[in-house]
Image (cartoon, rainbow, N blue to C red; front, side, top):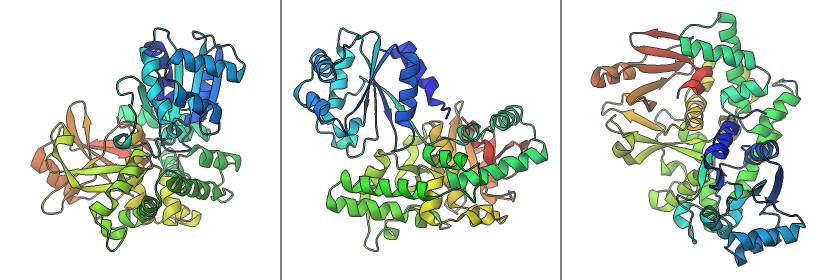
Length: 432
């Protein structure tokens, strides 16, 4: 599957190749596959090392920090001559060895130009708990997420449609109605399939038939996440993380979907679950959307620490965790997707584009789903699950703050009216 992140890898190689590359993201988003493809196509020699399964290499990092000693020992253990200039070494599952992560600093500072790439999920290695010296400023860090909707269209063989959607967005012109309806149907399917590569691949293998698709793929991913929670946390923390993760559909399914610790546990509070929530966020399994009380740059200055929403990193996993069925997805009753799935989808697309998540709420309960910084302007983004776009909240916000323009994401076609840019749900990935 073609992934946009490959272009970022190429930029790193051409500009910062002597700085170790670290690709971070949740489990099973495609880090290993994409880095493997990149290494094979862009280097003469390539060595792959999985630190989770290769105890002997892990022990090398425990014993040495000097890059020459590390490379020499790896060369002996693997029986391979390592030509430093022509060879790229890919260290996978870096989160299992803090010493290996710390060693990246020395690879950066070495006189020789090592080609080092690595991947990890940072499970259990939240930066604020790191026991060794984390190589701050010594690595080139890239974050990887599930396939966005455009990558999904590429993956299912709809590249021409993806190009047409981009044209409609850039020119702000409506798509032909039949194409618009087709794109909306594919968007609805994405809400169920999601962007995890294994899930998309299963859908393609079943001839893109939703009825034939086996959701055991998503079930296994959820189960793997739960297993990781027990593997990388203490027994007491594991129970908290597990309960918190499973509460997210309930959190998002309410009209007021501000995160509420009481929905995790009737005796829940910040002190009891804050560490568990941080663990999920650091592991890229969830994304935090903070409330701001004043829409000015930088938005981070105006966020209210104890008021936020939590979205899952993949809308397909949310549909699985929430218990949505294929029949629900195929239903014409778009109200099924109001709230949790639609908002979570938009949050996923923004995160994929490197957009931090913020929302706004007035004292009188007018609420804007997302605020984003575009070209130095704070732009309000209102999200609607269907074609009914009537909203008092956006009107209140516009009258109060007079933004350069506003964006309304909905089931409607492209358009621009009274300073409000209409963006169909299937084109959110183009907002950057």
